[in-house]
Length: 274
Image 1 (cartoon, helix red, strand yellow):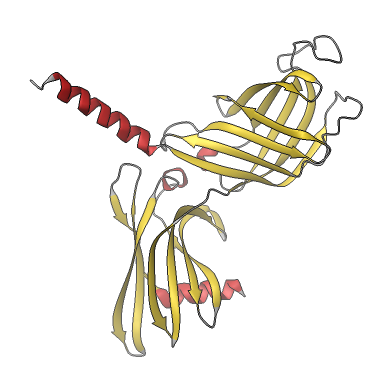
Image 2: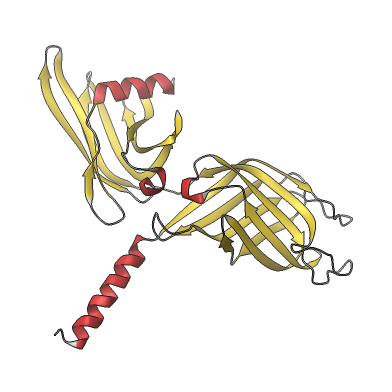
């Protein structure tokens, strides 16, 4: 039988390992629009929102995503900041007090699946709650009287970091390849997750190389690319370089990507870059 302190240590280590899997994602709403709804207060203009940011926490691929913060900037009204969301079946709700001329607003975020959130439309609705506001009596309905609507395209802007760098000479020019730990959506196919490698090729400029990752989108979000491998073979037209990436999944299991000809990736990246 294990000593009591050993069991406690094991439980604590398991708990810490689980906690370490949680990730935070940052999203912006682009192509954003907003408008006043049926309830309008003189001088309160909620049209033309110019930016919105969401912070999302998710413990692992099978756990629901939770909105930890929402900030919406309006050019003609003070910023809306919302915290403490509750999520049920894809509907995210929160209550915020003392905003604009109202004692309490109900906020709903819907229309988006954060489990697979690449380039989806998102909708935010604000309601004056049934509690009395400064301008009138209670309003009927579960949410309250509609006050504003915000919509747009959700884009992942989570910052990444460089985890590996390789430098070589190709076609007589120095080539620097920097591996990014952030998994992104393929700009040519939003349903495909890719590893991003930043290329700085002297004489050619900067571009991005994309390596497909063999995982479903929601699982790929938790992958961690950490090593860039380049192998060289002698071909009829000189040296040929091949590239693959090593990554770890959310459980720490290592896996490699497929191997790709570096020249092909560069040609594709710089052709699209021009």
